[in-house]
Every structure is written in structure tokens, then in C-alpha cells.
Image 1 (spheres, helix red, strand yellow):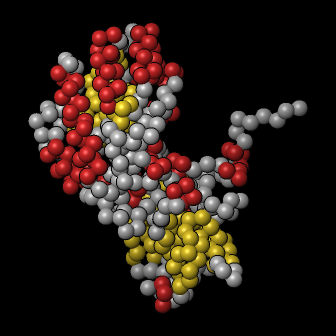
Image 2 (tube, rainbow, N blue to C red):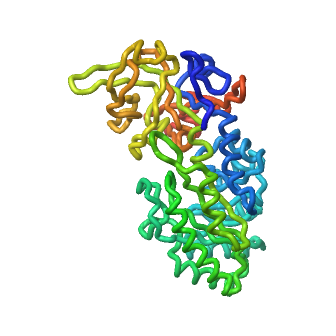
Length: 422
């Protein structure tokens, strides 16, 4: 559930009208609901209240430090995949002992940064990385807590670009080799301490069964490792629980929680979760202004001032984002301005620059505002300056007030750090 709703014919974020925000900050802009973020965090956290657990928000979903701070204030940690994400999380006030470091390509300087910071553990993705962590830890006279990311070869039944648990994916180590690496680490690597097992199978998963399948295999691995004398304290289940963009029947965290708790009963382990999309996806919208409309013999186009550089998901994955008018002409909208079938496109010079294809829409006119829903995850965090477009501003709404949590970039910002040659 989120707190974006109509009051009369005006669209609101909590207690503030979207029109009021846009008058101050312009478009395109990302708008987040603080109340929704809090609701989503507690829905997930409370699903595991009966067992030892740690919620490590997946920073890659949305890395704004105001959002990180919101979850950290509620007792959460973070899942990071880069030194930059660690830097952001520390600036937001995270406890380093609530940080897990995932990702297949950790650089030596990033590993060193994390070791000096004193994070909880690294989720190791390859044998070479395991040895690199040991070497760097030895040089720094540190001990590194590690979990190996086990690839269970489970089909998460999601988009292939966000599937991570199959043998053909780049992530993790296959089960038999992973067990060998744990044993090798215990016997030969003196500066790493195996303390956990990590298993993350994908993103936007809308069924419980893939998690259950992965968990069956992971439990067997934990049993094998304990028989080898390796003290496994943590099971990192990753993230991946999906949300509703259109008509997906995404399971509530409570249902997911019950399945996981039942399946891990008796393991005597602390569960770690890395939710991202489920925390922020429906807590954010992208607001854009209609620039022009264009009628063709085969297509109608609504051309807006946001583009694929602002929200890449439709062009990358063909993803669906619901579109709502910020002001209803006359509720319901189809009694006022009528309805058309149109593509919603942006100004970027790519045919892939679209937000909707052949979508039934209100008959938007130049100057009107539309809200692209469910844009809080992998929206701004994947945005770019393609076509030399300044990135959008970000706004947080809290009750009847709003704050700019990232200023809109300027043209001057676009060339920061560049130099002309004589």
C-alpha cells in the first residue's frame, strides 16, 4: 500500500498536492512518500519478529541518503555492492556491523575500505575474490567475516535480466565448489572467517516457491558445513520479493515470512534479508510534464519532458508503470477530456525512449502533468546524463510538508570535472 491518492480531482503525496510540489521544483521530479517507506519497512521487519533477523536494505534500489537514513533510523542495515554505496550508507549513519557487501567485482581498494570500516561480512562471489579478501585482510592485520554466495540453480521465474540464481548467471559459486571453498578457507585462509551462507536468486519474484526451492538446497549446505566444523551463524536470503506494478499477485511479506520461518525452524541461525524494490518501489513516483501531443496515421504520441535517462526500466525490460493524471479533468477522467490510445515518449534520440506503448490514456494536453507510478526502485538510481540531460531532483514528502532531498542538476553540473584541451 502507498500514500499517493486523489483528493477531489487533485493527486496528492500524503498531505501535499503534486501540483504544489511541481510549482516549486519543476519537472521531471521524483517524489517519495516517507509514510510509505516506514510502512513497508515495518511490514517486512514484523514478518520476522519471532526469529533473530537483520534487514539490510539493498542500496542499489534507491541510494539517496535521506531514504537510507529513514531505514537506518528504524533499526535497519544495508546491503551494498560498491565502495560508493558504503560511503553513502556511512554518511547516512549506518552501523558498520549491519553492512553486508555483495557484488561480483569488488576492487581491492573497495575491499580495503570495507575492512577498515569493520563491516559484518562480505558475500563472496568467486574463489579468486575469496583469496583476494584474505590477502588484503592479512596486510591490514584484520579478520574478514565472509559468506559465500551459493548459486542453487533455481529458476526465479522473473525477467532474465534480473535472474541471478541459475548456473548460466554470473553470480555466485555452484554448490559443490562452494562447499570446497568453505573448507579451503577454514583450513588455509587465516584472515577470513566463514560465518554465513548467502543465497540470492533474483529480483521481482512474485511466487514463494522459488525461495522455498532455494532454501531446501541452502539448508543442506549449512548442514554439510557444520559437519565440517564450520560455524555458520548467518543465512543471507538476499532480496527479490516482487511488488505490484500492474496486475502481479505479489505475496505480502507476512506470507513470505511464514514460509521462511517454517522452513528454517531448528536451524539456530540469524536470518539476513536484502529487500530493495519491495521497500521503495511503490513509495516513489516520477512526475513529468506533457510537452506536445502528436497524431499519426498509425500512432498517437504524448511527448513528455522525462525520458529514458530518468527512468530506464521500460526501455531496458519493457516494464509497466501505471500512468495517472495529476489533475482529473472531471472525475472520472474519461467523462472530461476523453480517452486515447497512445505511446508516451520522451525527448531522447532513441526509439527505445518510451514509458508506455499503445496505452489507453486520458487525452493529455500540452502543459498537463502525469505521474509514473511505482518508480521508487531502480528509477533515479539508474538514471544518467544521456543526451546531456541534467538529472531530475528528488523530493521527500512527510505528512503536510515536503523537502528537496536532491537538487536538480544544472548545465554547469554536466561538465564538472571536464577540461578543454588547448
